[in-house]
Image (cartoon, rainbow, N blue to C red; front, side, top):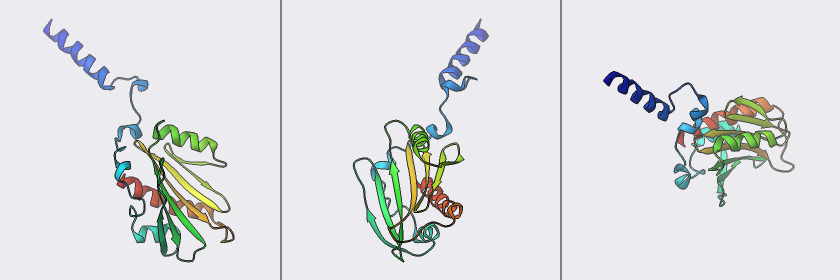
Length: 172
């Protein structure tokens, strides 16, 4: 009788811990990262190094301007030429990060999946990479100012943005 109780107790513990075979009871790997509190102290203008910004911009970074709002932490980083800028954003969505990224991906025109939690968009004047990172959404955009030019190699720009997005995600 004691072995039976031990086996039943172990089964209950495993079921409550989400270790059973039912995937509906388990959180996704992205949900496992509890990083929502990072949002409160995040400074998107200092989250990346000058070298990381230069690699993403394709030239030296210029001025940085904090553009936080009630719903996101953000920073605009001009390229030295003044023709384009990076826009770095961090969001803590109420719906959950994975759900927000899925919604944004469905709403975007010509979105391309990078992996299960990340997608990209590349157009003539803007490209961006957006990813769920635990409870947060990280988005890195490359945007030409009006009359500043256009993106001629979308995949290369997306690759640079993806590298920066991954670096930022490691800090959140």
